[in-house]
Image (cartoon, rainbow, N blue to C red; front, side):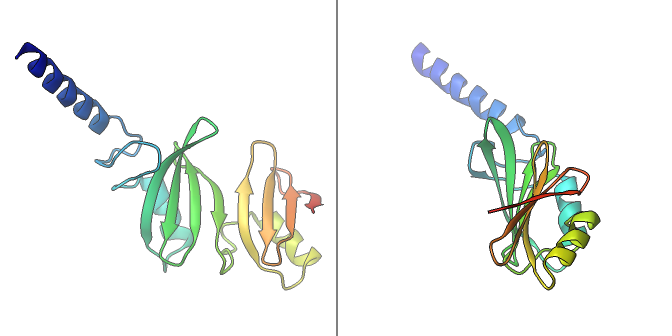
Length: 152
C-alpha cells in the first residue's frame, strides 16, 4: 500500500515537472523529437514576416549537438530550425527562399556570381553563413556577408 502510494506520487510529480519545463511556454511534450503544441512568439512572428502565405504545420523539439532546437515545418514544404531562444539558424525551401530571409549582402553577391540562381537554403554557423543554390552549389560567407568560398 505504501509502495503504491509512493509510486503514484512519483508519477504525479514527474508529470507536473514535465508539464512545467518548457522554453515555449506551452502545454506540449518537452522531450526530444516531440511535437510542440504552442509556438513561441518570435517563431510565429518570423514565419508571419517571411512566409505570410504559409502556415505552421508542425513544430518538433530536438536536441542537436547538446542544444535544444525547434524544427518548424510549414505548409509550403519550407523547413526552419530555431535555437531554444527562438532565433533562426537554418531555413530551407525547395521553392527558393524569400529575399527577406537571406542577408542583403549575400543575396547581392550570389546574384552577381550566379545570375538567375535560386537560393534554397541558408544556414547560420557560429563563425560564418552558408547558402545552397538549387543546383546544389554551396557558398560560404562571413557573418558580415563577405564572400569566403564556394564549397565543393
